[in-house]
Amino acid sequence: MAFQIPRGTQDILPGEVEKWQFIENTARELCNKFQYKEVRTPIFEHTELFARGVGESTDIVQKEMYTFQDRKGRSITLRPEGTASTVRAFVEKKLFANAIQPTKLYYIGPMFRYERPQTGRFRQFVQFGVEAIGSNDPAIDAEVIALAMTLYQSVGLKKLKLIINSLGDGDSRTNHREALIAHFQPRINEFCSDCQNRLTQNPLRILDCKKDRDHELLETAPKILDYLNEDSKLYFEKVQEYLTNIGISFEVDASLVRGLDYYNHTAFEIMSDSEGFGAITTLCGGGRYNGLVEDVGGPETPGIGFALSIERLIAALEAEGVQLPLSTGVDCYLVSMGEKAKDKTVTLLHELRMAGLRAEKDYEDKKMKAQFKSADRHNARFVAVLGDEELVQNVIAIKDMETGSQENVSLEKLVSYLKERL
Image (tube, rainbow, N blue to C red):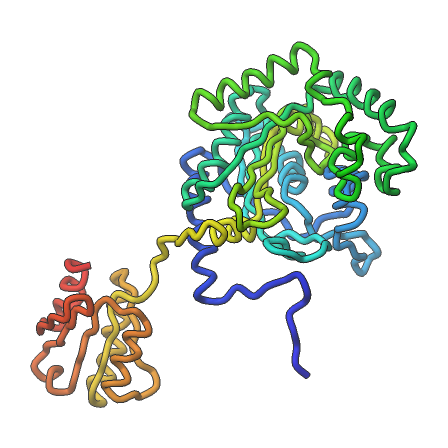
């Protein structure tokens, strides 16, 4: 029986995985500069965490989660996003008691959602996200947005658009919610069943509906910016001021809402402006979630974060034709002629690797010409040739594959010779 990979998943093989490693390393280095520390949470959690943390009315909870019962009948869900798990860890491990606040965390790992696979979207996907928990300062909002933008720019993307909005505080959202209900209720039967349920659960989600996005009432729906109280207005103005001061361009879009229930105040998305990217242009989304920590059993603690899909980032790189500066090939390929020389290359190979060099040799008893071809396939910078005669003389011939020059060096100086030239 021939097995095939499940739909919506992917094998990332050598030749492609190097892109992932480069992006993930870039993200880790960037988080180190911004002083965000890595957190690793379980791939599965109790279902109630996501129902409460993500929101009962969201498509994720209602339609997209991989949920099952374990052997003791407990409902378990493969994590569909990273924020709820990170906040759960923050509460459970009492990180709010640490002397250094806010608590600044990041994660990189697989998430799972049952949705229709398409370009850059998979049922198992890798998400990079950051969470800054414990500050109400609008400067931390600007910092989180800046981190996301800097990552995209660091890997070479240029055609980016940052969209921001404010969802306001609790009072602002309550007033806006009532206005939305009054706006949609008379004609709610014209909307999909999901939106009809959202009318009382979370009418803001109607604005984010994919099925009814062309309905005329969405165009005339009350805008949250018209319902912001004075504190919310000042907060949003300060976020914009900080973004402007650090040189990050943005557009304010009053129709922007995020797909998760826990957002308030600042909400943002980063989109690809590349023509070849496709219809769904969002690369990254995030925002402030004051109240989420309390929802999962913690003390009153504000927070803000974002998450992005590595798959969609790679799709954006391909759409813009960006070539990542990947380090491929080996520093030295060892070619041997004769049994004693072949045995010696085993020791030499280990010495090169322990010295920090990328090295390889033949393991198929190929002829010398075939070994050189193998060195070419490995994109070797240098080829070191050792025969039984050279072994007796305690020397090895090193060929520079870029210049074609060749010279003999003593076996003891092989490592230092290569390091000097690399």
